[in-house]
Length: 479
Ligand SMILES: Cc1cc2nc3c(=O)[nH]c(=O)nc-3n(C[C@H](O)[C@H](O)[C@H](O)COP(=O)(O)OP(=O)(O)OC[C@H]3O[C@@H](n4cnc5c(N)ncnc54)[C@H](O)[C@@H]3O)c2cc1C
Image 1 (tube, rainbow, N blue to C red):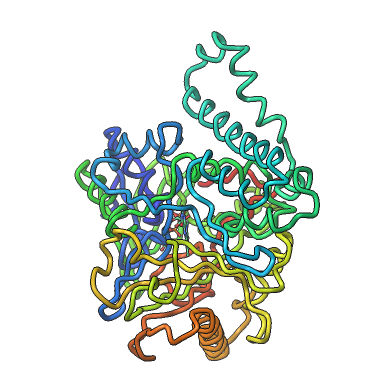
Image 2 (image 1 turned 30 degrees about the vertical axis):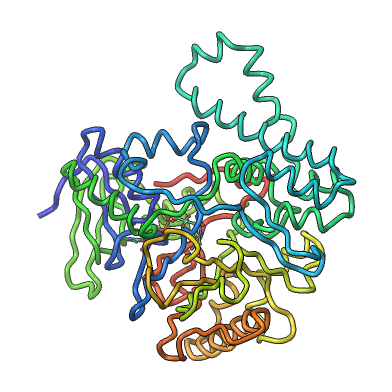
C-alpha cells in the first residue's frame, strides 16, 4: 500500500541524507530511497579482503567558527558524535617545475611564510593573494551567517558593504586571471599555490576565482580533516538520525518515476533490483539528489524540456579516477612525507596544462602520465586499517567520455593497463618495490567517475555527475 510522507529523498549520498536528516529533525516524516545496497553514495567505506577502503572523502575543509558548514554539523550534533582528525599540512607538491618538493601548511600565516621563503621576490604579491582568499571567505561567511536576518543588513550597511566588496571585486574573474595578474608567467608559484586544483576543477581559465578562493581559504583557515572511521561513519550517523526521528531509510530501491500533477510533485515510484516489486509513495516535497538529466528521465516526457532548460548552458563536471592500494609497509617507508602529495608529471609545466589531464585516461597508456595525488591514510589516526595492509590511494582527473563508448572488455583492459602504468610510476619514484600485496590480493581498482557511488562498478552508470564550476554554472535546482 502506498505510504504518505512529508518528504522523500532520492538517493542516500551526503546531499540526500543531510537534507532528509535536517527535515526529519524539524518534525517531518521523511523517506530516503537508495538504489545501492549501502547508504552514503560517494561517502562510503568498503572492504576488499582485509583492507578497508575510503571511497572518496579524504579531506574536509574548514570546520572553523566561520565555516558555513558548521551550523549544519552542529544542528545535527555531528561535531560531537564524530571525530574530525586534523590531516596536517594541506599538501606537498612534487614536480619538475617546482624543483624541491614544496609543502603548503595550513594556517594563513604559516602558508604565507612557507611560500614566501620559497619565492621571496614575490612577497608582496603572495601577501595580496592570501589577503584576497581570506577576504572572499570572510564575505561568504558573513552572508551565510546573516542570510535570514534582514535587520542585520539594514543596521550594518557600511560594514557589510566593505566586507562583501571582495565578492563584487573578484566578480567573474577566473583563477588564471587572478594568478596571472599577481604572478605573471611564474608558473612554479601558481602550481605551488593551486596544486590541489583538481579538488574543484581542471581548467583554471574557466574556474571562477571566488569558487576556488572560498574553499581554499577554508582549508587554510580551518585545516583539512578526515572523519575517523571514514566517511561511512558520517553517512551511518545521518541514517541513524533520520531513523531516530521516525524517518525511513530503504536500500536496494531505485526510483524511476516522479509522479506529478501539473507542475507539482506528488510522489515517486520505485522498484527493487529485479524490478519485480514496484511501489509508490507520496510526499509534497522530493529531494532529487541525482543529476538533472537523470531526474528528467523520471518525469513525463512532456515536462522534460522545461525542467532541463536552466541547465542547458552548463558543462559536465570533471570526474575522478581512484586506485586503492593495500600496502604491506607504511608509505613513509618509501618517502611519502605528507597525508596528501600531488605529483606533477614533467609535461605539467603550467597550471593551465591541468586542463589536459582529464583526457589522458582516454588514451592508451603511453609516455604521458596524468597528474595525480597520493593519500597516505596511515599517517593519521584514520581508524581504518590499524594493521597491514595499509591504505594508500591515488586520485586524478577523469572524464566520463573516456569510458562511456568502450565495451566492458576494452574498458577493463584499459583500466588494468592504466593501473599498472600508474603504480609503476609510484614504484619508480619510491626507488624500490612499494611492497603492495601480490596481484589478486592487492586491493586496487579504478573508478570511472568522482561523482558516483562506490557501489557502482560500471562507469556507464556514472554519467549522472554534476556540472563544472564555470562562469554560468552557479546554481543547481532539483525537483
Ligand atoms: C574519488 C572522490 C574523492 C572525493 N574527495 C573529496 C574530498 O576529499 N573532500 C570533499 O569535500 N569531497 C570529496 N569528494 C566529493 C564528495 O564525496 C561528494 O561531493 C559527495 O559525497 C556527493 O554527495 P551527493 O549526495 O551529491 O552524491 P552521491 O554521493 O553520488 O549520492 C547519490 C546517491 O544517490 C543514489 N541514487 C542515484 N540515483 C538514484 C535513484 N534513481 N534511486 C535511488 N537512489 C539513487 C546513488 O546510488 C547514490 O548513493 C570526493 C568524491 C569522489 C568521488
